[in-house]
Length: 571
Image 1 (cartoon, rainbow, N blue to C red):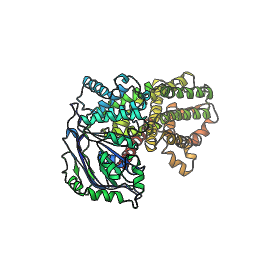
Image 2 (image 1 turned 180 degrees about the vertical axis):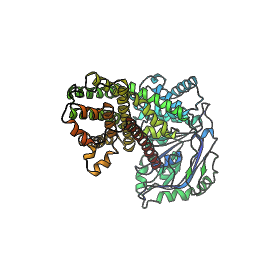
Image 3 (image 1 turned 30 degrees about the vertical axis):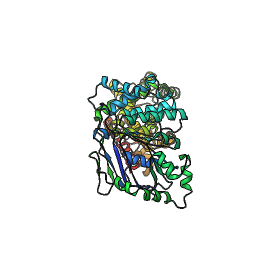
Image 4 (image 1 turned 45 degrees about the horizontal axis):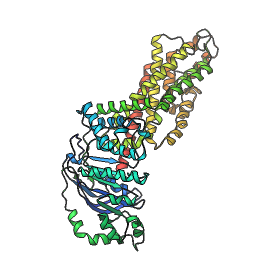
């Protein structure tokens, strides 16, 4: 299917024809089996069934989010009407921003790059008016009511005037009055030509729909038709009892077989739909969806960076933690280390080792904690925006673009304050810039590692549990507590994978610890220098090169993890 985006008025909706759809999970359990149905343009269709019946799976296959294991889905309609809007069950939009700002960012990601600011503002205002949200435009999404957030989630997709809307449990958790109001909104969308398909656990929602699709617990089609025809077919006054009627069947296929027998002619006619130009079917029967026309990478990066920056600024608690925690660490450093440890006439070799190590670890810790919660907390949002054409490279680089400047300020403050308090060697401007570059690259590598780990886990709790697992090796195998040459062979090899080692050694080289320990008046200097071997002998640019390699490696791995997670979800 194509998802060409337009700001023109909506056109005729899209008809959907599904033929013999099947889906199963990796353990072989079948979720859907032999589902064939057709949906006319401009209809509102409800998919109902018991928990585990495969409602969401069927919805995602019809929307093109998942590919079926067997069967085909085809669409009738113009290419412009073939744009798809998918609204997941959760309210998957950022809650920190005002509603109008949220929609404006979404419009810039979805509408063609040539769309100007005035046209975007007009489109946002139009959508807000259609969904009766104009008076809530300046309200942060997190402060909207449940029904308003549902409408806001729909508004994100309505910006592109899609010809098909797919909604997963849109009335879940809403009180009856708000649910009815939302269904009326969907009805009005269908009246403008959009084809609306939704799943629901609230069987009473069906009365507001043109057609109902009933699935058995085994993922088979028990009925499709009007709500009135469904009540007659199951011999019920109300469809509230339809699940009980299905469970009372003597065998799982009783109702699917009865429905197939009664409607064989109609089902045969439905299978004769020709594939619309907006889709193609592969030789093995899998649906292949034409990728949406995407906004350019540079524009995506700019929009995502601006949105991330606005989210950080508006979330004052998060901003306070990002800037406040380094200040606390800096205060502890000032209390822990005595001044004058780098005095040329009377240095303290063991203290200089600890100062350099904890500075390096501070940069690592700041970067890691900044990145560790960035992706896992918004994975559902990322999945949704991937459907709208957002690429992963701009997404990851936008995170770096916002967080790295914060780290640059923090690292500069850390070094500047310690230098002013005589906790660093009396270096000139060039060497101070070299110390700063080393620390910033260390923070960047840790930030990239945090983004990688955040991409690999599913929630904030898992990311938090990873924090000590990531920090301990960066303490033990860096070479500060035990010099790398003195480690066992396994520890020496592992130390190469520690980005903090290269920051520690780079800081030591720039600080001139070899000369300080060798020529200073402390008797501990020469023996300590001998245990470190050539750790501080490499030119600092070598350490920078290694740290830069870590940045690229971790960002590339984060990209690959997100690609793999997306492919697993779509398979």
